Image 1 (cartoon, rainbow, N blue to C red):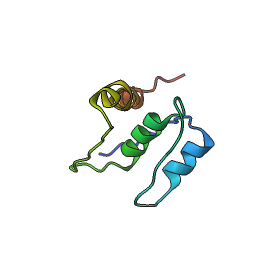
Image 2: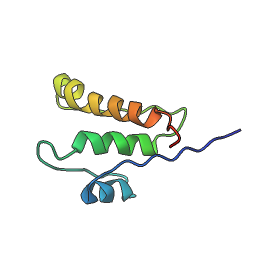
Image 3: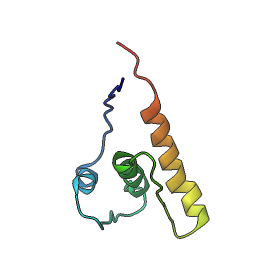
Amino acid sequence: MTTTVTKTVRVYRKQQRFTDSTALLRAFVGGIGSGKSFIGALDLIKRAKPGRLYLVTAPTYSMLSDATFRSFTGLGQQLSRRSTPT
């Protein structure tokens, strides 16, 4: 049996345009605090397919650890939480 769960994640309009793009190569460019790591994590989670390998990079390990990995794991935990009935 397959169960589908729908979760809502709030994003800015420009972030939504980025995730809606079907271009093979694309980039989200913005300043500090513009949500680059967050939208990159969300985009990867949305597009990932079971059984495949993916690579996420950053200019330095510190950047990868402090921003990219933190955004990815935080979003993954947020999306994996079970909804409670209200």
